[in-house]
Image 1 (cartoon, rainbow, N blue to C red):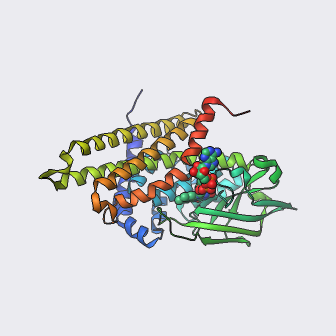
Image 2 (tube, protein in one colour; image 1 turned 180 degrees about the horizontal axis):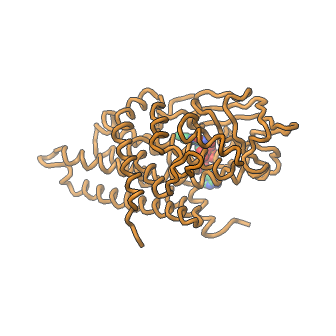
Image 3 (cartoon, rainbow, N blue to C red; image 1 turned 135 degrees about the horizontal axis):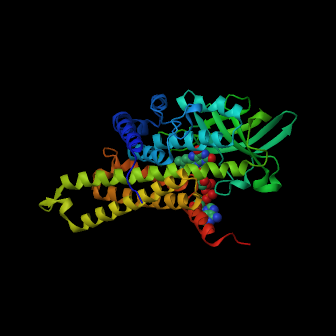
Length: 383
Ligand SMILES: Cc1cc2nc3c(=O)[nH]c(=O)nc-3n(C[C@H](O)[C@H](O)[C@H](O)COP(=O)(O)OP(=O)(O)OC[C@H]3O[C@@H](n4cnc5c(N)ncnc54)[C@H](O)[C@@H]3O)c2cc1C
């Protein structure tokens, strides 16, 4: 067993770290405060070869392996979950989905544009009455001649304001449940595609674009189908299976950032005539955090490695997402506590890590759903 990264993986990690520290970190707090995504970073991520990391070079990608992709997501997650979230939706849920399920025409039309950041992608699955139970979706796709006509609503769609293209899931036969679902690549300027920011102020990921999409007699050509008619549920689940790896890696980054910030703070802060770092209770907390970060990182790298080997990865990816997001949630909570009143203000980044991390436990399948997936692999489906 070799735990050493390859030279190429180390290069991706170093490039991602430099970009995150020099270009993301200086704008992250202000973007969070203003609730605006720093869109200038999108083209930059395209130039650096990040937006289409694992996509083959013939479609404009960098052809990186999944371990490298996990390292990239970890480094971005360490600095800002809104930027990491942008990347994983755009790349894992949109580009890789088109790469795996698209026709040659769809791949050559969309992938190069998504790789440079000329176009932005979003993934529209969740609905007001269909979250974890995606197969119960109410959005419909009516077949009419050479077209499908979409009607329905999607909510919480990340990247949705700026997106030029959306992967949309709709049912052509609701009584067939998951077997009735179709996936479409929809260009967002189609008549009948309407979007508006979600109401309310988010707990975290405040720089991300979260959108409510309404389809009103939105007519798309049959060539917009991604995969065959009725295969949409498989398309959706395979995208999430891949997407979860990026989320899990992002969570490792958040946990590491919490640990780094806490160590720096407690070494500097003095109370009762000594460094806070010298209290044993604080040391025990730091040691537990460090053990969790390492364990989460190994689970993520192992799931990425298994993907690179072409092995089945559903259980490994769900275990990685479950463990890493729970570990990062715990780390963020402890980090705020160790910072005392300073951790309660956005003067220090741990406040943002604490708000952002909850989202990672919810999207791309909540922690409950990850447990369900893992348990199904252990004991099979109920008859
Ligand atoms: C920041 C953010 C970004 C998002 N981005 C996107 C996006 O880009 N595209 C998109 O399509 N969606 C997106 N979502 C939506 C997200 O994927 C859903 O919120 C998530 O899948 C859960 O669905 P729900 O919120 O409707 O919860 P529900 O499904 O209503 O669940 C409510 C609670 O019940 C639990 N539960 C449900 N079923 C079971 C079960 N069988 N066993 C045990 N517990 C269960 C859940 O775990 C949860 O705790 C985003 C959400 C957030 C917060």
